[in-house]
Figure (spheres, rainbow, N blue to C red):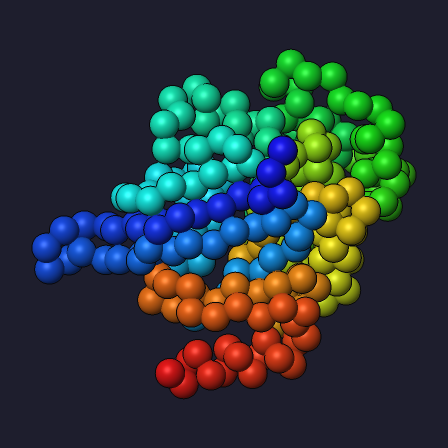
Length: 243
């Protein structure tokens, strides 16, 4: 197995044509190491969400290649892509995306149930314990706080032991305390579970939990920052906006 969990090579994404053509990504090349927590940042319209959606197989690029582990996404059929997203990728969204009629536990195991896979009980117990939601498993989403709902969403993303977990503004709808809890969980996923975590965020504090920040502007990677702090990230963002 490679030590690279995901990569993009010369990734280009354009919308429209002629005078109305928009270049969302311009030959982006970036790698994400196994067990690494990366934050993707940039001004509004920089292409960060488009990059994540292409990496996760939710959108297709105009040109270039995306690889998850040793699997190149370009040539996969729709069925193969669905299987890859289900079995090897976890998602945490800003809006939680929980099914309101299911309990927390049923939401956590739903992707596995759909795939016909039996949850690994020991692993599931470990994830639930780490997330501190063991006493909330029989509650429905309406009976949980926002932070608890997002922790359930994190558990769902981790339950199938995916190769990589993507988070699209995973703390965007949370207060600062809940936000810190969820980011600590994603940090622990990398440190304790050797998961690869990639989040899109606009929040320097959220980015400070990562090992590395990748900065995009106008659809291109223009900078990277290792061992970020909220202050160094904020300074770099200010420089980008000035440029």
